[in-house]
Image 1 (cartoon, rainbow, N blue to C red):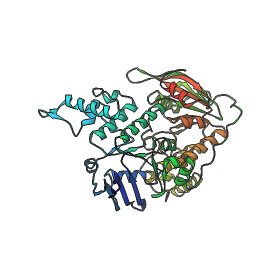
Image 2: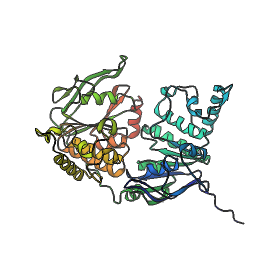
Image 3: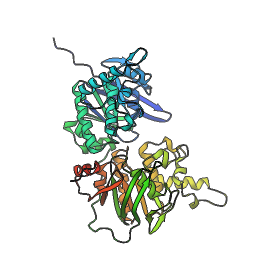
Image 4: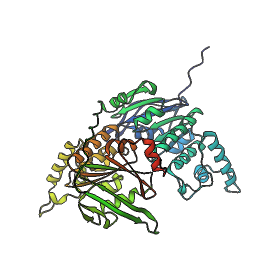
Length: 499
């Protein structure tokens, strides 16, 4: 007698989920097998996060159901999901920096002795787990002292400690260097080889093609493609994601920019509250019609540099805009696209129209205040011009997807009369369609004579857009490259290794 096929590790069957008028998931079927790395991709707002939240018990479906190892389960909370062998590693780590690696991994399921945590047993269990999966981590190290890549291993180990047989990873390389990302994918292969099913949610198609076995593509809440990774390519995946092919990037200009620098950073040193230098003697220029990229591992001084250039750190003689010092409190001569869309770039509870006008109120103000009709009209104009997908400019900006919120920030900042543009992680967490649009807008601004300072953790983005790439390491500029530099060469400089 022929054996029946093994059940999938997890299945979502006919899953639909609505939030008010928005249908986030519409009859989605998705199945992941044991030992498989299954990528889930799609545009911002395509329904990926909602679907994974349903599988992890954060949301309940309005229709459809979840199967675990062939059996129907009801997941009313993450605790239910964990009991059924489902684990999730979130984009923003949920670790306690003041606790050790072992304490973070066993928390909530601690081995106890005499009513207290048995540290010896915890260390032994974590060491055995790390050895089994090849996830090196010192059980006694404080998590707050660890680099980002190791913290991510701790998150994975915590899920595996709870005997997760299905592991969901949400944008796992968003904060990793290229070398750390490569090591993560090696780890995922090792974990999958033990029979764990892995769902990989990512916007980066290079990662999908390099790391997955199967791919499911979502668009507007529906499945638009299912592929075996070995039998597809980036072009086919992009078409399934956005319904068209991407426009080739604009060719590079042959002539270098000329004229006096619009942004001139001179021997800039910044110290923190304890007197520790976070930037030490940083100097560079950005000329009109030029994009200068900033690369570096997290914590290399990028935040201090951006805050100094925009005036958020206060005025300083070390930063000149058109020959005069930057003004404290947020220099209006600088257009600023922050990494933190919600905390720094927008007022979440205000309407989209109000957010699009923020900082430019004087252009519409009368002696009687701001005419609401004019604010809405300006908002509708920018929505159409920048292809922002929204039902109404009166909706709070928090109701928009991440990609559309980012387009709104760019619409506001790139329509300011600014000679200097500071773009900080402008495509982090957005899909390929939005990424294409953001890149086109930055290139257009450069071609119209803006001086652009671009800070990005994505080396491919820097190589595509920047005319020059500066590398920060421990608060110093340690190297400068042209756009043709190899990613391996850039990655080495980012970790302090010079060729």
